[in-house]
Structures are given as C-alpha cells and as structure tokens.
Image (cartoon, rainbow over all chains, first blue to last red; front, side, top):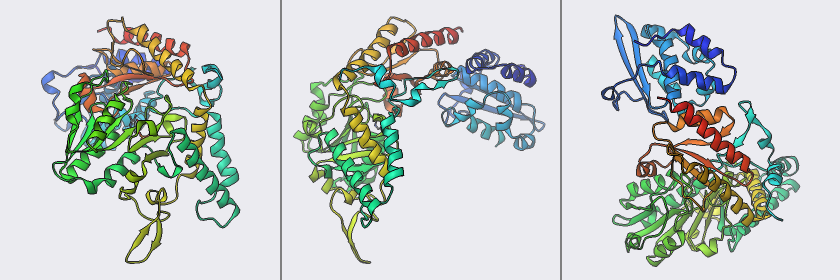
Length: 130
Length: 405
Ligand SMILES: Cc1ncc(COP(=O)(O)O)c(C=O)c1O
C-alpha cells in the first residue's frame, strides 16, 4: 500500500513557491502512486471528462473507503496521490461531508483545479463522494 | 512597409505580461490570437461614442451605430474579396456558420445523398454534417486525406452524382497542413455539390479571395484573426445564401409579420435574427483592416520561418515525433512517445510558455495518427525567433525531467 501521509505531502507542496517547483514536486510524488494493472484499467473504471486517462477503483470494508487510482499522465498521478491521501480511510458519509475542493486548495494546487475543464479533477472528486 | 515582428509585437499589450514568473511566450495562436491595440480601441470607441441598436434609425446614435455596422460589412467583404457586402452574414463564429448551412440545406437532402468531408476536419466541420446525415438519412463520407495533405487522383471517385455537399477545411487546425482545396473544389463543382470551405485557420495567415476559390460558402471566426470573440462570418454566393432556410427567426430578419404568416427580409438580414454583436462586428472589421495594412507576404514568410526553425531544431531528436509538415505551415504539432502531452504542457506552462496539448477537436484525425493527443505550438505574426528557440529549449528540458523512468 502506498504511504499516503497527508501532512507530509501537504508540507512538500506548500513549500513550493513557483509553478515550476510545484510541477517538479508533483512529478516526484507521482512515483509513490501504486499503479493499477492493465486488467484493472477498464472502460468502467475510467473517469469521464479527463484529457489524460484516469482510472478510479473504490473498495469498501467495514464502512471505510479505500481508493486506487492511476493515470497515463505523471502530473495527474501526482494529483491523484494527493486526492487519495485525502480520501482514503474515510466513510462515505465523512467524504460527502468534506469540502474536497477547499481541502485540495490547501495543497497549493489551485491552478490544477481551475484547469479542471480539461483535466477533470472535479469529476474525480464527485465520483469519490458519490 | 516591410514586415517586422518586433514592431508589430509592440501593438499587442497582452504580450508584455509575465506568466508564472516568466515572460509570456504565447504559442497557442491556432486556438485564438491576441488582439492589437487598434481592435481594443475600436471596441471602446464604439461604446463611448456610438452605442445604440442598429437598423432602428430615428436618432443620432442609432444612425452612427448603423453606419459603422454596415461599413464593417463592406470592410470584411473587401478583406475576403467578396463581390458584394450583402454576401457577408454575421455569425458568432465558424461553428455557428457551419451549423447555419447544415440546418439551412436540410431540405435538399434525401436518403442516398452524400455529404463529403475530409479526414482533417475540426469537429466543428464534422459533427454538424454527421448529425445532418442522421436527420435526413444521407450518408456521411470521408475523403481520406493524409497528414501531408496532397491530392491523389483516386480521390476523384469520392465525388459522384450522389454528392450533394462537400465541406472541407483549408488548413488543419491540429497539424497545420494545407489541404488540396483547389482540386477538391473543382471535383465537387464538377458534380454540382454545394461547397463549403472552413477558413478558420487560414484567415490570419493568407490573403483570402473567395471569388478565386469559387466556393459556395466560406466561414471563419474573428477571434482567430486578431479580432474579438463571439463574431464570425458566413460568406455565401447569392444563390447559395438564398436557398438556406433561416435557422433562427425573430426580429430584424422579417419584412412583414401577421399571426398567420411572415415575409422574410432580404439578404443579409434574412439570416441575421435578433440584435447583432455590434461591437464584435466593428472589432472584426478593424482586425481585417489591421491585417490588410501589413506586408502579408513578409508576414506569412516570417510565421513559416518560425515553424520551420522549430521543426529543424527538433527533427533529429529521437524522442520526438513531428506530425506537421516540414514546410509551408505555421504549426508544429508533435508528440513524445512515453510522455503524456499534458505533462509536457504542464512544464512549458510553468515556464510561461502557452501551447496546446490535446486532441484539438479532431478525434478521428488523432486516431489516424495513432495518438490520443499532440502538443501543438502555433505561430502568429508577433512571435519572435527567440520565442521559438525558447520553446525548443524548454521542451527538451521537459523531456529530460519527465523521461526518467
Ligand atoms: C479548422 C477549424 N474549424 C472550426 C473551428 C471552430 O471555430 P470556433 O470555435 O471559433 O467556432 C476551429 C477552431 O478551433 C478550427 O480551427
């Protein structure tokens, strides 16, 4: 299982003072994301509306949600790592009560949120809460 | 006046901006161009000196606005060498122009008729025809142009007695290649098809002569030729415009209305329902005048030189595949197998460089190229050689950073 220490990730991204630094940090974080196998990358698991392909799988055990996600783009894999660090280990009800957009903006990722018309981050958040 | 990019550049205030702590390098011109000060001034002047509704007459401001509005039609007509200003219909852009034709010609299609497009179309010149085919039972056929865009004698057979409409782009937005428009239009005319040319990617670069092209319809957008957004043109030959059923009806496009009947107005008003985009029209005409006042030959040579510079810098790099032609283009569309174009785009953006990563509204063409997206740098008159060089340098940096696993 990927080590998704939310606070550590947040600290690393908050230390970035330029778009270039954020870019490099996301690329570096992307390496921590556990990749999906080809058989898991099904059409059904694909999140619609993303310019890069994004797959999202949800598991529930004793009311706790765990997500796995992957993308063919590195930046997106970095963003997915951040999203998973927020979402994993919560119940559906807790996730639905969370303001994920605001949470994500605390990771210094607002420009990746505003470009969501093409990258589909909002769609991923919606699916996590659905 | 000899062409000089730096002199021209100074006329575009937005190009002074910084983006992500770097000087802005704007190479997304095929998506939309930046606007020169004269166009911005024209928009402001309209609202500060002339704003009123048009064609309603009866007062000082309305006369001024109407005169400017109709004068703009003359200026745009001259820009594309249309024989008469009445042949220029204002629309909100290329997409609306094509839809007006696709709906307006619906009456003339029946099952077994064919609509012919090419494999290099933007979705705007594909989906309206596909949907028209669905509605009427006509067949949509696709002329399989290659990414080199040349004419092949065997294309002749795509034009036959069933071909009712032929619609084609002059230049591919995704890869910047010119299509063999003259041969295709000749073949379409030989079978009496209606012809439509999508000039969206051509107008900013090449002088347009609709009479020499001799197509029935020519469509383009203001925002891709240094004009405002939300304004475009549907040019048509009189017989072609006459037979279009108006898609939108309402005010301005009628001459007499009762509860039982409506008499439509004459062209161009018949196809312009409602209050038009007056300041857009004036801004677009100003952009036409701006372009017409330049050394057009010098301008296109410059733009092509920038694209060629990038092509030559990158062509021997084994990681890079270039999908655009080597010459005669203002676009370099490329990919780096193994690295997602969105990642390349993300790094370029972090360095202040604006390009476009994506499918460029051309999914079937991407499939033909065997990719899901490309990275496209597209040049305009105000770009410089140092910007072209910076694009190459930063792209190679991006490949270095992203290609390490
Ligand atoms: C070749 C081509 N056709 C049509 C369009 C659509 O133009 P608009 O979005 O201005 O209607 C574009 C714009 O990207 C284009 O490049």
